[in-house]
Image 1: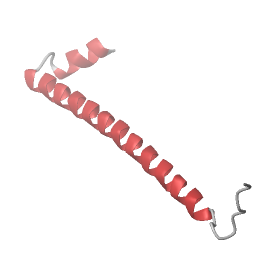
Image 2 (image 1 turned 120 degrees about the horizontal axis):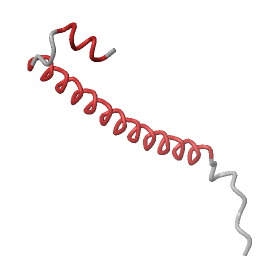
Image 3 (image 1 turned 120 degrees about the vertical axis):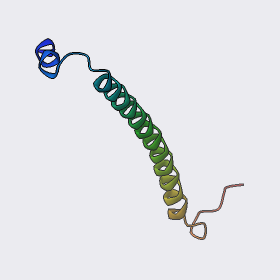
Length: 67
């Protein structure tokens, strides 16, 4: 099928190959950006969760430590 498509568009046009390489690089860049943003989002969610836990602890109602 790929050979038929390449034959249909006229073979290896250098402009087409350059455009394909550019688009493949763009896809790789976007995938890398997505991984970075997901990691950042996970870190922010963990920090927000920690903050919610700390806010839920009421120090005035905590029981005194046994001595």
